[in-house]
Length: 155
Figure 1 (cartoon, rainbow, N blue to C red):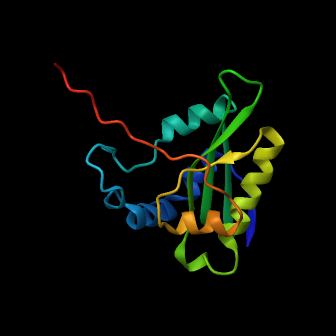
Figure 2 (cartoon, helix red, strand yellow):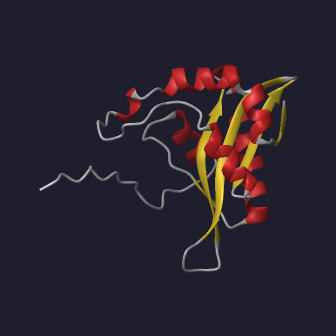
């Protein structure tokens, strides 16, 4: 297995099959939240725009020529400090490649790249997910909880 930084353009060209598998696996159902109304698709324009201005960090896992996993994080200055925050957007390793440390290595490559540019990587993980278990096994610790506000009503 090979783990390396990748451009969004290359990820979009080589990652379609893995995106489809990722979407089938996570879908919207795991959210169980009617307020979380999103369309599950790749936001190509948004990712390309973030990459163009240097606010995106992307790494991928390859088995030979096949892309089998990817991790994407944003890189941005903190509003009131001199810190640079790296926030994980998405992380996926194809189920056939999860044994043997592929997820751990992908996370390590992204983390090393992030520390070279910023401070630490912050990830959101669904409770009980495969990704949450990976984060805990690598020594990540929970610092905060994420809340989703309901849409305000008129009146």
